[in-house]
Amino acid sequence: MENKVNFITSEKGKPLVLLNLHKYRFIRERKDGIKKWLCTKKSCYASILTNGEYVHETINEHHHPENSQQSIERQVLREACKRKSNNTICVRPIKIIRNELMGSNGNHSEIEHRDVRSIRKAMYDKRRKNYPAFPKSNLKFKFY
Ligand SMILES: [Zn+2]
Image (cartoon, rainbow, N blue to C red; front, side, top):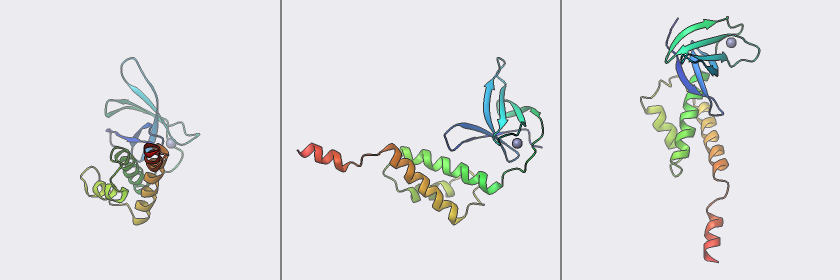
């Protein structure tokens, strides 16, 4: 069992901890800096305590299978792309995804074409949410 955790981002932008393909959401931080995380699966009471990047203690067993490597990679890639998409609004999503896939940030061997399509859609959706009014309306306003 690995004793080092990975930090990833949930679909809602919340921090998650990843350990042995199980995801945990943040519960609280103790006075001594140790953080408590609970399994993201509802009704599962497996939790862990982390000290920085390391596992301090694991509590309870999971009563469900772990996530697939593919679903984790897809989530990591999707969140990284969504963040970039927001910072670089004029770069086409497919370009950001390609850069992210070819970069050394992660191993995305399990990512399939289908995943890329869904990530691309997520990026477009996010942009639309953040920039609801297309510049067209601003232009009109300026010229009147
Ligand atoms: Zn669990």
